[in-house]
Length: 494
Ligand SMILES: [Zn+2]
Image (cartoon, rainbow, N blue to C red; front, side, top):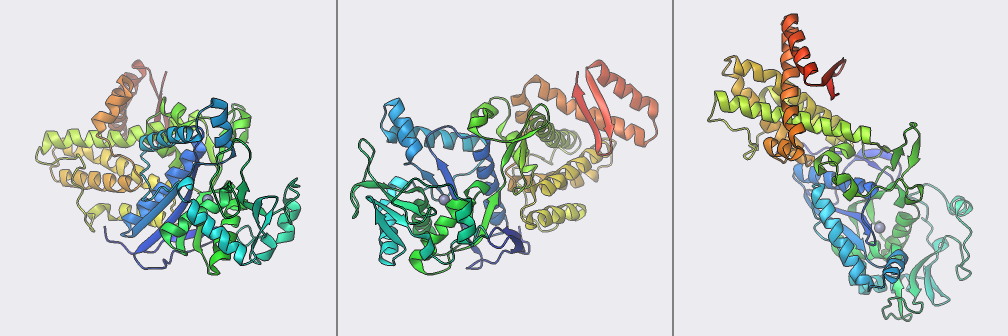
């Protein structure tokens, strides 16, 4: 789809929105810090992966050629500890959780990255970078390890917006006596007995965590690239350290735009917010969630918040997302039914979405969607547009059924647009009947409920209040309670 390329992006470096200007017009390189593979992924991981999946999809929808690199940390302390507790080789553990990651992501509709490098397969690149940092006096050996000397890199703190003294006062007191500065970090770790190790010019050992992202992004995206992303929790020290390594070794500016997604908060029963963490006991794996909600619903739930805002996690909000997903599919199902009954030559399967620039009476909706996404990937606003389109489709269906044949083309275009825009967000990829069938009996009835609610609304607009009351009564008898709000009518089961 042809559109002007005018994305505004919030850059954590400098903390302001700026126009996205690519190093090479038409092409974007993007690196996102991936997961450490020693356990199942939780909702926090789901958020990072869904957020950057959307960003990649949107950049591609804008016609850009995107190279997306997302790594696996497949060696670190937690991996070694877990594998040793299970008495299995660490590779067996990491293979298992890389496979689990891919299965979870597939269920969430998150595509594979173009390159998914693993740390243990890039030791040569990491060692080359460490050697260059040593040669430049930016790194030093201590007790068999190699450390980065942060006070030799004057720009240290540029991403956090703090100087060395401020960062130092806020840092934990480090017990490692081999460090010259508490903010110095390890680039290469000397092997401890019984741990996995690799040969290096500095003896047998393994890489530190930060160096892998610098080395692997450099290999696949070049020594400078456009966008680096990750969770807010990685901004300091991980991303600050990545900058120190990459810019320190090349002497050149590295990443243009830094994007960070917000934390996931858990809403407790008493309405309190807690940061999600394992230690709080509110750890919910993606698998737990997928046992209760379709992947698409989890995705919609995540996208209902802007990526930089905190994401409140509660079953109530998940249910809201489920209901929203039902409403979107219900509009498609209703349109299908009406089109098949009145214009069998039209199909609303969305299989052949035309790549059109003109959406007729729907053009404003399309423009609103793109304006929202252009504005720092504002998915809540973009999703609101999807609901507007669904509402308009629902309103047009009775007109078609009453014989206004020209409404058929209108509905068809609306369905095409809805599918087209939703696909950019990785939503509505299913056939409506299949979606409701998977949701079980309950779901099949949802379509009918939404249709009855629409009929009631139409009756009220036509001031046929007895008819509207009859529909409310009919729903009441089926155990469905309606609630009329400013935003429209919602319903719940008894
Ligand atoms: Zn990283």
